Length: 373
Ligand code: GLY
Image 1 (cartoon, helix red, strand yellow):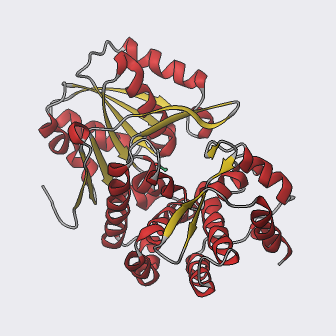
Image 2: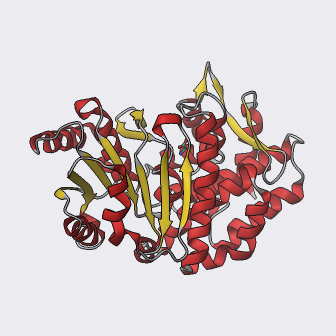
């Protein structure tokens, strides 16, 4: 087995602990990586149409060569797949394959596949084994780790789901090679988030090495994915079900989610772009409230902008932004508790904290300042 530039992260959750293995080309080694878990012979790969002729081929071959009994379910690509009707089709397909409790479901893909397949694994037979093989940068550094699974309903995004930890995560850096640059940048915003929320040294490292991550340097990418996963793992270990500290992972997301609602979760503004603008605003809001030095907010915005991420709503074309409407989206967010919207603010880079008593007038002022700049 080639172990060059391989990184290992452990998610420590007692009897639900699991490793994250990060490396280049490791989908080809799937069988050797999975075998030590001693799971049942049957492996059901759930993936989407975009990956059927690429990563699925490598995974199928690796598992067949390792003597696994494989079946495949190919979903339609895109966020619409995370619906109740597609979920119903998925669990029917899984059950028709004649599974038992030892069966292992492998989610091969980005956040959509990971979320819906994870939800299916957590519900069929009250839970079968799950392995995540995330192929997008967002999925590698965030959604495949920590056990959140979900589908969307007409009432909103990710409103139905479970906390269900995988047995293993295999993050193959090689799969990032085929990602469009916009998708790579979207994942990069989530990577920056880990520096901002608790690790100034990592943020400094990103200031120097971030461009290498975007230009496809596998060593820099593996280090960034591993550092992000390590940071997420340490938060999830302390607060698996988001009763407190896990909310830190929502830095930039209260703003960002409202922007995504306004743009209809469309290509006009993809997730990481919304998070990038949201993080810029979270830092501006922290400065306005006298909590954070202005130089830190400028440094955050400077880095996001330099790498190619948006930091202002005005850079998103074709949307008639309105601060009142954005605030009303925030008020319906699932992060609202007893009518209070939770914001993640910061005392500086690497010093984020949870704040539940932000006045909406201040939030509105920050949005209007951006819109009128
Ligand atoms: N994506 C945020 C979390 O996993 O908690």
